[in-house]
Image 1 (cartoon, rainbow, N blue to C red):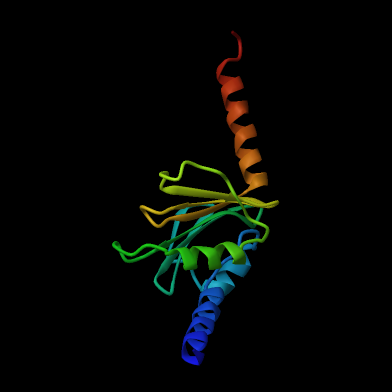
Image 2 (cartoon, helix red, strand yellow; image 1 turned 120 degrees about the vertical axis):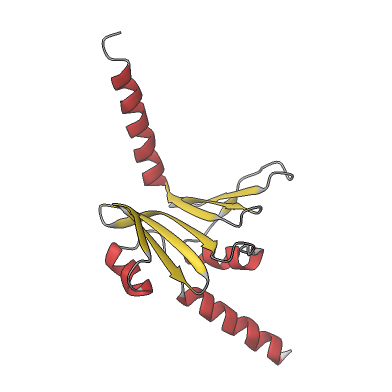
Length: 149
C-alpha cells in the first residue's frame, strides 16, 4: 500500500512540475519550459516537456489558450493526466452534459473552458475572455463584409 501511495505521489509531483498554466505570462512559460521548440505563429509557442507537446497562445503577454498532447503518435492523455492538468489550470470545473457517446468532453469554470478529445488525446483550454474577444472580432469582420448593403 505504501509503495502504491508513494508511486502515485511521485507521479502527481512530476506531472504538476511540467505544466504551464492558463493566465501565465510569456516569461513564466519560458521559465517553466526553457526555450520553445517552435514558434508556429507570432503569438504562439510550442514547448516539449516530459513527452508532452504544450502549445501556448498569448494575447497582451498572457496565455489565453493552450493545449496538451503527448508527443508519441500512438500515446493519448489518460483520464488521470487530464484531471491533474485541469486542476492545475483552475478549480470548480463543471462538466457540460453531453451525449455519452460523444468522444469530446467539455468542462467550464469561472475563468475558462476545457475540452478533451478522447480519440486524439488533445486537451485544450481557452479563457472565457479570449472566447468573448474572438466572438467580437468575428462579428466585426462579418459586419464589415456587409457594409454598404
